[in-house]
Image (tube, rainbow, N blue to C red; front, top):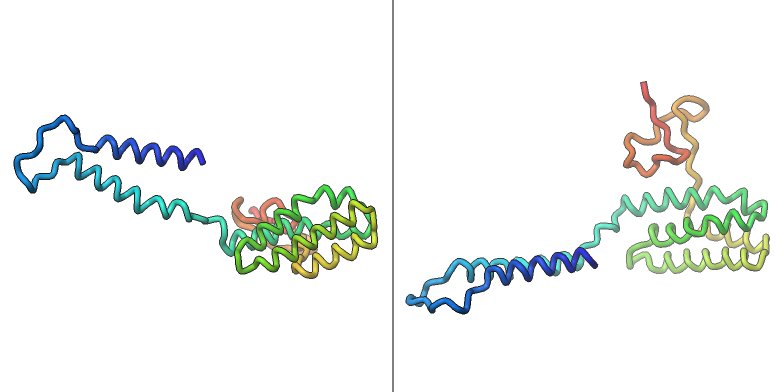
Length: 186
């Protein structure tokens, strides 16, 4: 909001800076256009062309961000399997944000609206079971949520050991700081 206000203020300022001075004498030739008027028209045209593009810019939805959301938050949800089996309501409630972020990040587009609605209903069923302290309902709702949304655990990857490999190459990888993140350093 602040950024768009600043951009609009700069656009208005530049347009008024190049506006023709009303105190000047009229030009004696009919085809003469002064520089201020020309630059004012160019600036106004640039603003008209640029504003609709800025209003509809949405770079947050891509296959990379959807995959990152599914992997990061899905693995946090999958890691709750033992807590759900033990009936640990507090552990599941502590990961409420993982459910919210998974639902919004894994299904951000209009074409996945039905999947998002089903995921939200599954989340609501899980937290209804937590509120009622019903272990069987929690287990059933959790298993349904995990299977419906195709949530899997991340493998534990180590640089050497039982599951050797390299899980990521840079700090920008979505596997960074997860149990699937291992990097080989010589």
